[in-house]
Picture (cartoon, rainbow, N blue to C red):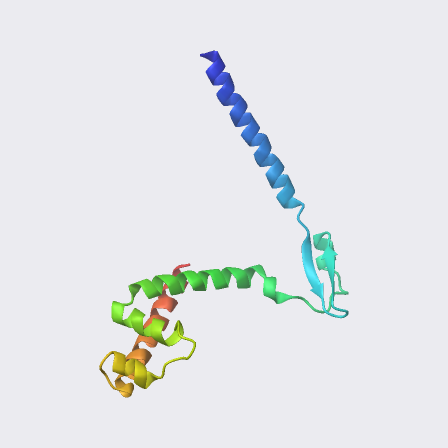
Length: 142
C-alpha cells in the first residue's frame, strides 16, 4: 500500500514541477511592439522599455482591453442570436451570411418568404433593433 501512495505523491510532484516550468516559460515571453518609422519590428525586453519616451507610435491593435471587449462583444452577439426566433435568425443569415457569390436583393428574399420587399425590409429592421437591444443587455453582463 505504501508503494501506491508513494507513486501518487511522485506523480503529483512531477505535475507540480511541470506546472512550475510552464509558468516560468510564460513569464519569459517577449512583448513585441511595431515601430512604424522604418517598417521594422523591435522587441521590448522589459516593461521599462515600454515606458520609454522614444516610443512615438503605439500599436493599439493588440491592446488587452480592446481584445477583451471584442471577445465580450462576440459572446454577447452569440447569446443574442440564440434568443432570436427561427424566422429572425433566417433573415439575419440571408442578409449578412449569404452563401451565394451574388448577393440577393431584398425583393428576391421577400419572394422567398412570400412577402413584399417593403415588408421584408421592415422585418429586417425590427430584427436588427431587437438584436442591438439584446447585445447591449448581454454585453453589460460580461
